[in-house]
Structure formats: structure tokens, C-alpha cells
Image (tube, rainbow, N blue to C red; front, side, top):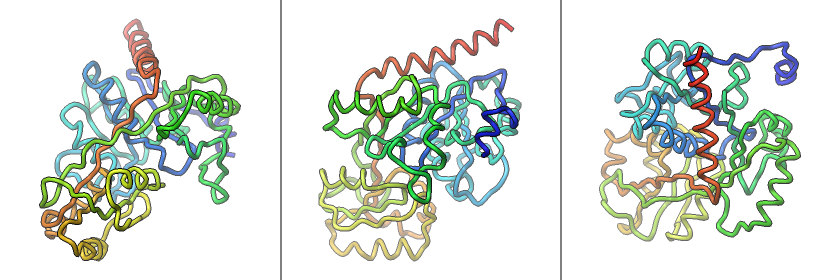
Length: 331
């Protein structure tokens, strides 16, 4: 009903002058890889534009608008915004706010010359109409094969895909073929229309230490607080002997008891603890308890890469940004 009211104009969406807004979101309840895609967009644009990332800050204990600084942790700003700030803080501004329609004008007043704002997890935030709306879906569980929660994992109907300007398919397996891609496109365009569709996969880097050991061993205990961690588990089993997997819910707030239970499981000196970069942000809050720094903790960085046509995706984004900013200059 809410979407219908926006579709018929009974409720209005806002577009902002003075900057370009890029929305990154999904139809499902997490697990599509929004943060790696957001990081890709930041890398693409940060050297030529003043970029800001705006998020609701899911899981934080604070309220209102907050512009991140070095003192922020997951509890004050949310794990994903803190991850973005720690990675790109010298090149971009990261802001969290429940009300994005108020946050953008405030951001413009506080950050001079900000010309691109990336809206994280914004597909259902209909009050803002992004200049470029990027919809993500996982290859192995695409939106067109899913159902609305609680029967499935969709937040809204499949027909919501028609609001997308670009569709990015994430977490493609190495075995995907050209025929698989063609069949996928036909099914997706049934709902999304003739939008450009791009296929990506995860590229995992070497594990990074944030505990007491410089290099990771073969035997690991995997710790995840993300949505749909099976994809990561399969990858880890290719490179490591996974002795156990502590699987928590997405954006899980770890407790001291949780951490103590996990490190108690490390009974072999050759066993290491491996987690995601997002979980590392939350776990770092316990560093003062010696539960992190005194243990063999590692996190696994991840980026996306396009199976093909990556330059075409880059061109779509850059062209949209350039066209909007040039039109503003002419006005």
C-alpha cells in the first residue's frame, strides 16, 4: 500500500538539487553485498568528486544525525558506516541519520562542495528518489525466485524491481556460464524491465590480523554476524580447515559472554579465529578486555569485481554524475 501511494503520487518523493544521489539497495532482507558495492562506488568517484556516504546506521545505540569521526564505533554509528569511515575517512564524509531527507540538507550545509551522496540501503526509502537507483540481488537466491517475508526473504513484492535504473547481480559462482547469464537476464527483466544488468563476484583478499598473531594458520574457527553466511563458509572451506562456525544474526551485538565462549573453543595453539570485516568493527569494541588483542583474530577483506562489462557500469555511473552536475552548472 505504501509503495502504491508513492507510485500514484499520493505521497511525494524528493529529488535534491545541488548534488547527485546514488541509491544502493535490495528487495531482500540483507546478504546481497551492499557494502562492497558502496565501497566500489566510492573508489570510482572519490578522486574526481566530493563524496559522502549516508546510512541509517543500523544497530547503533545513538539517535539523530551524526557525522562520523575517529572516536566512533559500531555502538555509536553502526558497523557498516564505521567500516566505510575507517577505510575512506580521509577521502569522504560518512553520515548516519534516521531521516535522510533532513540529513542531506544538513550535510550540504556542513560539508562544503559535497556533490555526490551515496545512499546505503535506500531502495525502500521512497521519500528520496535517487538520481541513480542501483538494485542488488544475489545470483544464488535472486529476487524473482523469492517470496515476501515470512514466506521468503523479500521486503516487498518483486515488481519493486521496476524502480531500478541498474541491476547488479552479486556473489556469482565461478561456474556461471554465458547461458546461465542469459537465462538470468530474461527472468530478471520480466520484473525490472530493460535495465542494464551486471554480474559480479567476490574477490577475497588475504586475511588481516587484528589480534596477537601476524599470519593465519590452516585451521580456523569462523565467526560471522552477517546475513546468509553460507557463501563465505564455502569460500573458507576451500582455503582452510573450518573446525567450527559460530553463526550469529546480521549486525549482531556481541557480548562479553559470546567472546569468552568463542575464545574458549581455541584449545589448539594452531587454531585461529577468522571473521568478516564488518564483524571486526563490532569485535574491536572488546579490545580493552584483552579478548581480541591477546587472541589470534583475523578478518577477511572482500571487494567486488565484474565478470564482464565493468567499464560499462563505470560509464553509466560517471555519465549520470556528470550530466546532473553539468545541468546544475548551467542553471
